[in-house]
Image 1 (spheres, rainbow, N blue to C red):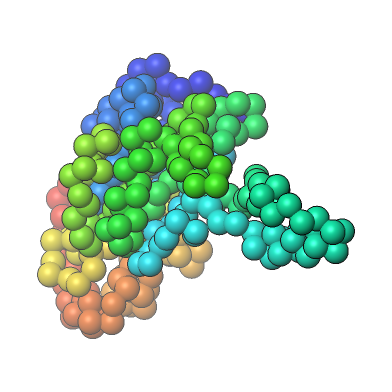
Image 2: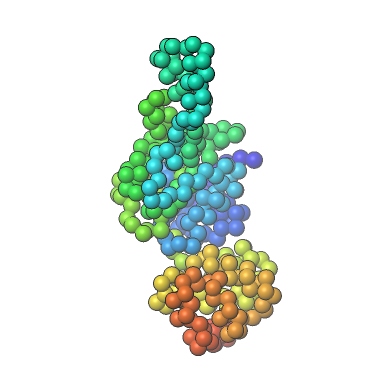
Length: 307
């Protein structure tokens, strides 16, 4: 069932809470303005901090289909927007020839119509969803795409339209709700950013990370959750190749809960580091004595805080 867009920042916070997305008020404000004014939301941040999840939750709680364009090097119009079904067109031509159709002008019009058009994510997003509500369009990890494709997006994000030479310009009756994400492996051009409302998604503080665990892994014990958050927060201050994101915190909490761990100890920390850290150099740097020292430090801080 399609739900109306939120009418205030507080409603936006409530909407995100309903989707178990623990947001700060800054993100809720930017998202509310994006939805209210019909502008794309451009979110940057480190991998695993919850950028993609914003679009997923938005589609879920609003009852809209999610259309995802995963960007990568070499992404082109044929993969992102549309292409013609050449196999079906060739069959149509062969049938026309067998039936003695010789008017090539009419045949050209016949094979270049919407019956033979394969709609890719960007073109799909310009079509109304069932019930007439526009879908949520997620353009994920735009920094992985090439600059020419980024330039192509300017028309889509400015006027919510695409041009197909054989058919003309197709414009959305109701613009989709657009979320663009970037891990900032390269800078996105200012021309595209100007068409969006911008928000940087940072690592959460300890309090918000505790709330995230409570929402995502409700079966985790409070003592264990506090240890997990304290360890993760400590690791993010260290010189690691890849700092653990919120996604890793959730995965680690889920894994430890499945193992029926009630409280972290050095052996458990060492044995499960592969869930939290994704590079062998980082794991080797923390394993052993550093892991034991880290856990001792965390337990002392929790004891002082009365946790």
